Image (cartoon, rainbow, N blue to C red; front, side):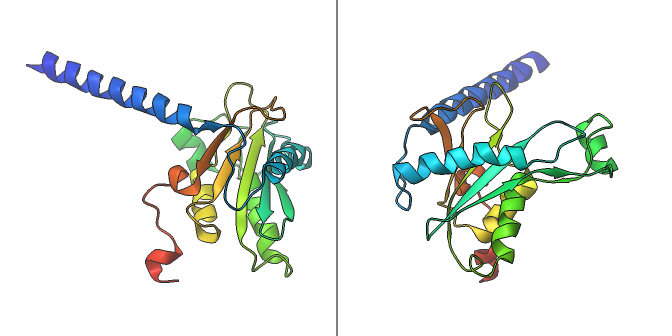
Length: 193
């Protein structure tokens, strides 16, 4: 009796994995032609995210992440991950991370905080964001906390671009909307804000 159920479960898992691969393939785009962003702005945004990695402070993990946010007036604001020596025990235990991983501020949140603290940018719409890291094989997508912070200050249709480490002009880039990153999200609109 257990064998058919186990086999059915395995097939279901395999089908989900295939669906995820298909879904990922359509997300790789060149110059997506987003409604609020020109192709030139898209390339500049990606370059600024790659450059923002140099602002990273990651002495414990050596995992640098840079982010760049495009505002409606064309300004690009950079952010980078900042680590510190405090070790977050619950996170380490849940994820079975090595001892050198501690609390940090992610690049995406760093950029958002800069925007919200600067009076000239505070009330501008964030049109798009790009995130880049030193990972060789796959783009670095935001953690759950960053996704929720993005949801607080950005529209669900905002594009988030994830160039790979060796991105070049006109190369494919993983491009997802915030809604695709955080489906069925809880945000200000749920609370009537």
